[in-house]
Amino acid sequence: MSEKMNAGMEKIYFHWILDHADQFQRVEPYYFKNEEIQFIYSAVREEYLISKNKVVPQPQQILAMVK
Image (cartoon, rainbow, N blue to C red):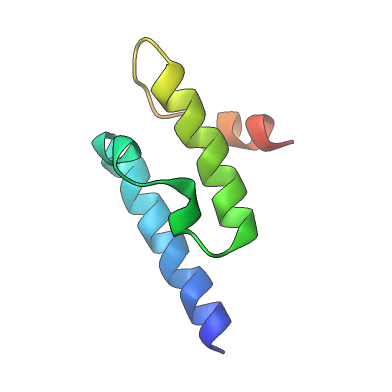
């Protein structure tokens, strides 16, 4: 049960970071213990940090990035 709770908390934190994109520079992917969330966060973070216009990808774009 604690793994489900941790994954749920990580999802909440991930969503919060998407709303507060300045946190991408502070929060490293290894902070997430759930491998799926860590993988997705890493892809989104990398894309955000290298982009010139610093726009957080939309959900459809995130899905395309991780496929």
